[in-house]
Image 1 (cartoon, helix red, strand yellow):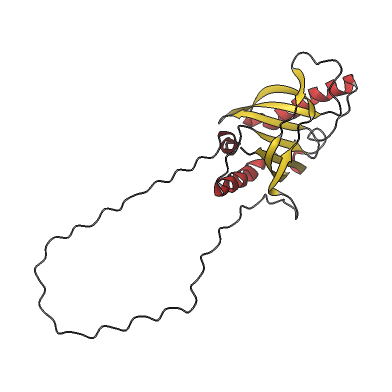
Image 2 (cartoon, one colour; image 1 turned 45 degrees about the vertical axis):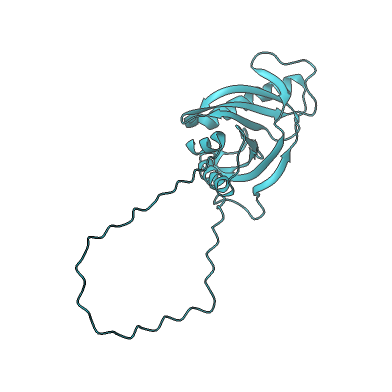
Length: 220
């Protein structure tokens, strides 16, 4: 999961030039004069220069389907959510995600709230071993009674973002994030300090190998 660090930390490009040292030549005695020779005729230039190959586009995941967005410009709209803050380790990330959504489902059902779209994980900080998150469920209306304890009410992130799609296992997201990082690096885009996973398939009822996840990368 460490490949996701590049998305949180942002992309920094540094161009470093290396000056090649000029070779030094020891003084050599003049060579014996040779009879003049007719220089060979220059090689004919090709009629049409060969165009440089275009850079390869970053490849989506192996389970991608035709029409799946990969780097699609989109605008996120702020929506009412109930969410739960927490921390987790990459080694047990999927268990942490499903555990958070189970708690949110209990709260939403108890309060009689109407969910309004796929659940999402908002990653607010990461390092090489773990992450901080806000597990969120969009709701049609904010709860009338403000939640207490570890659950809170608020708004989802908004603004310019790029949309990517992952199909397959949660562990397989590493390959998708690698392709996303390559895409952002190639485009020299600067990202905000978060990224979002939106679960098109419910992780509580879908097998881990058959997930469909939209990844949103907010752009500065």
